[in-house]
Length: 229
Ligand code: ADP
Image (spheres, rainbow, N blue to C red):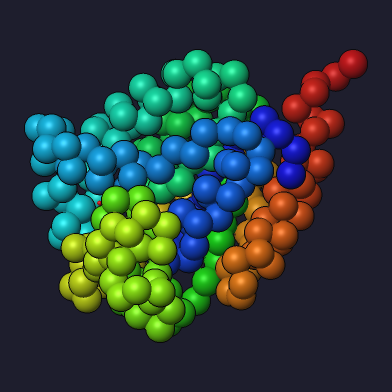
């Protein structure tokens, strides 16, 4: 994948969006924008906005569109994003958010919408066993714990289960994915932007597939986005 990419990442909870979005961003030299991370950081610093977002997150509900859109619009207007691009992780999740993103970016403002495809039974296993470092966000699984239980290999932080990785919240998040976010695949396919990639397997292999998928979509788009000569 070449540098300066403008990409969004779709996929069920536990599909590996976060892991792969970080890799793509590092590889392409663009900022990684995760709405979930932004809300968790705001909740941890106990700002009024963060505490409000936390109420929705812990139940597995979506944060209301107007709040999310405001936060993303502000981030996309920052110089680093305007200059080099972005990898959006966890946004958009509703039709309203997707339409607003199109409006914010304008025509040709997105290179591709990447869908990391993983069957539901696999993601349920991944999320219910997932454990995360409270400080750096590194992820582990009960079958693949850190070397010293339960302290992060990277920074020694406590490795815990996310509040919204409890069974009831997982069920609700997956229901909302089906209902609100799943239809966005058709939306981006209609715009000729969708790259669907098989997300089962080793992270390195998935990353290779992502590079190929995104390059294919970009190559198909280039002639029309350049316009007539
Ligand atoms: P996951 O995709 O595994 O649920 P995230 O870290 O991306 O985890 O998001 C955590 C929570 O943050 C979501 O369950 C939701 O409450 C909230 N959230 C994140 N992004 C959005 C969004 N685009 N719209 C509404 N709520 C969001």
